[in-house]
Structure formats: C-alpha cells, structure tokens
Length: 218
Image (tube, rainbow, N blue to C red; front, side):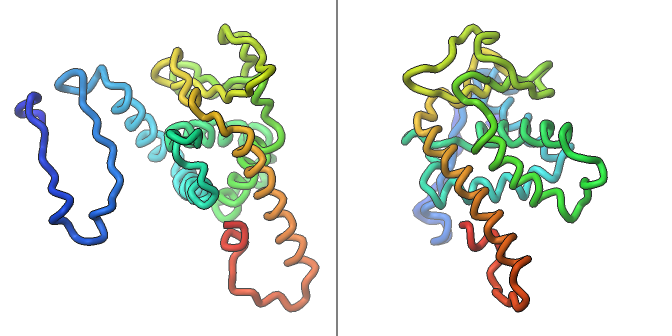
C-alpha cells in the first residue's frame, strides 16, 4: 500500500465467491515506494502500453495462451512458456510479420488470424532457436540476432530459447523454458492443422460444421 509501504493488504480468498477461490494470483513486492526499481512492474507496464498501441496483440495472445494451456506448456515451473515471454515473442512476431507482408493484405478482418498463423509458422518452423536470439533496441524495437552477439555460443547439446527483457538486456526471460523443443513442435503441428482445415473447407461443397477452425485445433 502506498500510504504505508511496510504493510501488505490482506485478501481472504476463503470468503470470496466460489469461482474466485481457486484464482491464481501473482504477488509482487516493490523495491521502492513508486515501484521504479521493480522489474515485474516494468514488465507489466511494457505489456499494457504495447496492447494500447497495438490492440491486435490482445486476441492473438489470448489464443496462444489457450493453446499453451491446452497442451500443458503454460507453466514455467515445469519448463513451459510464461505469459511475459509469450507476449515478447508475439510482439516480435508482429513486427517481423509486418515487415514481410504485402500492405494489401493488412486489414482489420484478416489480420488476427494471419498473425496467429504467422506466429505458429515462425516459431514452429523458421526461427533457429539454437543460433538466434530476440532483443529489443531502446526497449521497444525487436530484432533477431545471432546469440554470439549476446555473448553466447551456439547451442549444441541443450537448445535454449533466448528472448531478452526489453527493460533489462541481461535477463533472458526464457532461460527456464527447457521444454522449448516440444513447444516448437506443438506450434508447427498446430500450424499444419490450420492449413489442413482450410483445405477441407475449400474442397467441401457442403461444409456446415458449426465448429470453428480454432475449436478444431484446440
């Protein structure tokens, strides 16, 4: 609490509504009264500001989070991909996709689906995890560079993903994602499922399935 930084608010989860009793929460303690020295708060501010500037990231990020949860890859404690790292990867993919897409294909109706598919293809098939890293110039512009430029050698035995924190270039936010190759395979397989469903739709003359493509792949 700002009025008294030595006191913490008390939340009695036992007496909350039943649907909130199993609510998972993050507890963050600031290192200063205004939170300027706290990396978690800076990360939250980066995400909040980015979503305001690029609202297209919100639905795509939610779809990707659901995909990770469905496949049990969402818990960093078990080698999964955390929310902040996932968002940084999507943020980078958004800029890379914009650089490579024809301007004529950019539209409000198609962009979310295209960005979702592009993310899966990029991190499922194209991005070389063993050699490349994602960094952020001036805390905003994402770049892909060789790991050697970050003082790291190419992965040979154990492949690790490198996505550096925009607020702290010494922090690899994905350092504990030891299941990254399984996650990569899942991204690739999901992309293939999407393409197969598109083919089925275009080849069918009486397609009346109420399930969406997203329902099918999740």
